[in-house]
Image (cartoon, rainbow, N blue to C red; front, side, top):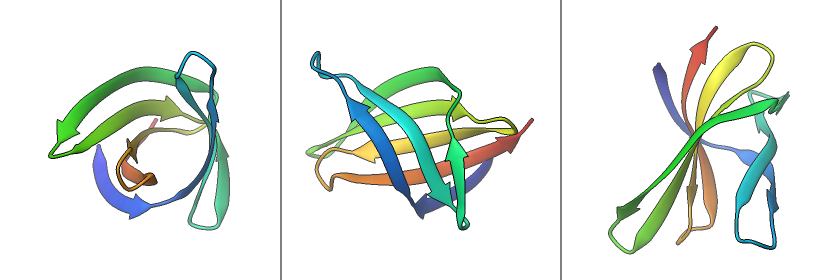
Length: 81
């Protein structure tokens, strides 16, 4: 997986049972529609909880990170399939 570590704009659904589901994100002036969340995990980084999402669109696999303290999203990596 190629590491990117760039902030991104994202649309996500926060469900009533406190789940987060990314729907699409913008990267390099292109909208990427998420067709599947393949894996999810979380970790602590100091006071922040980081939610990691392994997601895919029609052409690649991405790792997205949501930082709960900063309330920010990062595209951490990409693997073209």
